[in-house]
Length: 219
Image 1 (cartoon, helix red, strand yellow):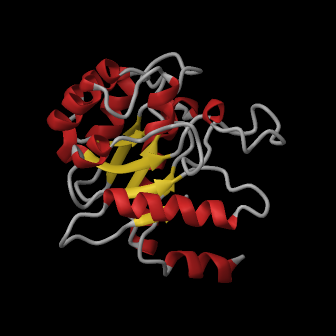
Image 2 (tube, helix red, strand yellow):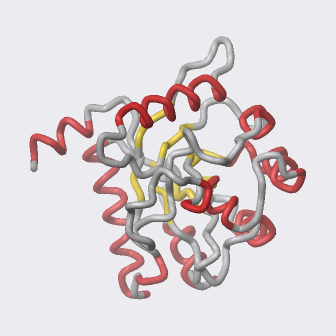
């Protein structure tokens, strides 16, 4: 729908998620860079979130070597279903090896890995890599929510934090730098408008700091 595409592109903030890079054939890596350039020139969007699991060192090296300076790949920490890039140690190694990469921190994936929003390990990680975090994917695991009993298992693992059993600590918000984007990834159930409003209210309230812009968005 061209009209819908234009309406979405006119939004003040956009977030784009690429398909898994592990499925990209080596011969298509140059093609990927060309397409990212085309999207950036057409839409003005220059940052793209990617799943980094199972991407080989050779692939990372080739992709980052060709990546234009004004285009950003933001790697996302993975959930327990993936083989790697799940722990903060694995993400640290990836970021250290490829300084061109940025980070999308997925709270739901971190909680599924057994972490908490007040974890000392996570807060120390934020302190070290905070300037490379571009966005937060904000949601909680299905196991934390009883309001979604009618949703088929496996449909999604991301649910709204509002009215869930998860307490997201203020320390989590305070440890993050200003200017990052917050993307609410939780599934919105049918007739769930009030739940969505509660989610955005909570997110804006906890992440807001005087003198800064409120930047919560629905993803």
